[in-house]
Image (cartoon, rainbow, N blue to C red; front, side, top):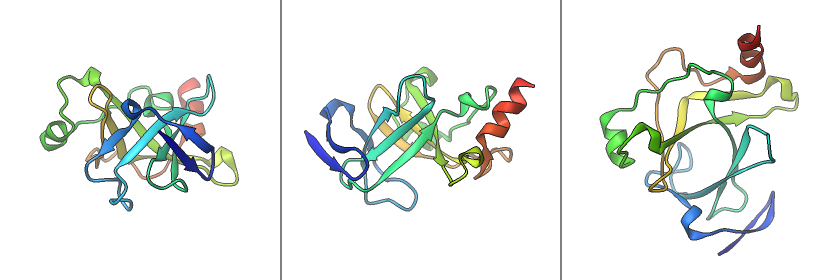
Length: 147
């Protein structure tokens, strides 16, 4: 199938690449289907493009890219809804906000995106870990891990 997007033009999408969000995302509950793809090779940032709204795309990053000890405890309800059989079946992403000054880009660890990569099911969950905030300064945290 082909979809028209504002940012990428026409994209060819295989049906088996589509990730289904039964509840949508916070603020975008009516949009249930997305694809995730890498921006460019060796870049930790990825795109999550809505299938049914060509104008809507999010930038994602794996929290492990800037916070190696990141852990997320999923509620039993989330595990059930995502039909997870094993932690290895998951991909976890944080939504990135990229301001004009890209050195101040942030990631939302309070509302991460969890994907069952086997069944192509996704859900935005709420982290109850008090260390997970709405705004984590990615580059600052990377620098902190190096030093």
